[in-house]
View 1 (spheres, rainbow, N blue to C red):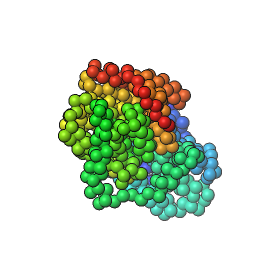
View 2 (cartoon, helix red, strand yellow):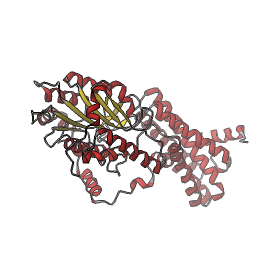
View 3 (cartoon, rainbow, N blue to C red):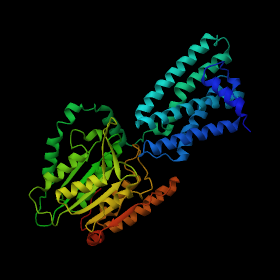
View 4 (tube, rainbow, N blue to C red):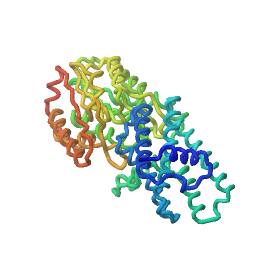
Length: 448
């Protein structure tokens, strides 16, 4: 049993900086476990309610919170207080819990998670400064144990909780392939583009891209391919969108026109930004004055998805843009007069895109069911798990979309089973008038 009155009194004294002595705190594993779970639960609720597009599985939240316990164990060993390891872990977790509650409360009131983070960091700094002044005024530092405890407590306030938000150590280990080293060097050598340059150049980029999207061969109903990399804060989505564009253009013939809209850093000055306005304008300009009855457009979208059928759309500096959604995409296609469409969505919760886009003239392929996340959104990878299965699959050999989808379902399921991940369950919707295209093979093989 946890002695509630005594524990509560010790906690209040700890947080109020009154007679802070490590031995005042209880050494109770049950209390540590309770604080650990409470901190994790608050972070999961924060992710679901505030950052709606960033669902955190409970196991991952426990992992993040556990870094505080690890920090406490290391600190206990470093200051020679190994018998007080649980007390030190409780002290660290108390700070983490207070910050998590404050973070969530501010975010709930303001609706701004980034503002909550800034305010909580300010609070941590003030608390750490007050702790340092209080302890020094009381003569701490005279003994090794007091000095070590003071350092540990300040470390808990300023570093421990931040460690909880940092990626695991393996995220710092870059793959050794030349391709990834080259991409990393390009990113490091590329200076951010000034908004004064970036936004004025959009009309010119859109116009040039629209010209390239106009069909060159009028003997057959034209097929257009558009790839969209909505998430610019990760290079992964730009790589995947470009590879999918190359694959799909080759799949429908060497003269198939294509266009890329991307927010990835390496694409900023070369192609239009992936925004709703650019996409809509591009389609209108590319189809202006043409008969669209037999036209087909193939669209591949890559980014972080949300439960409301939208992709998080941001620039490399994490500046958020208006999300690209299934409804905005359908509206742009309808306004351009393009009736037949194939839409492939590589994102979490991509199954939510099916209902807003469904029609007899539409095919929708999604990386996940409406209530499932997809996997592989890591810049150390070349593509996402879904993207890898789609791009390297049988479409390259001329297989039908139906065959390619059956293959990628099995490939994705095998990858997820190997990682112990919850199945993403890729989905496909085929409109009644698109079944022939769904089952049709291609005589064109695409080179790798």
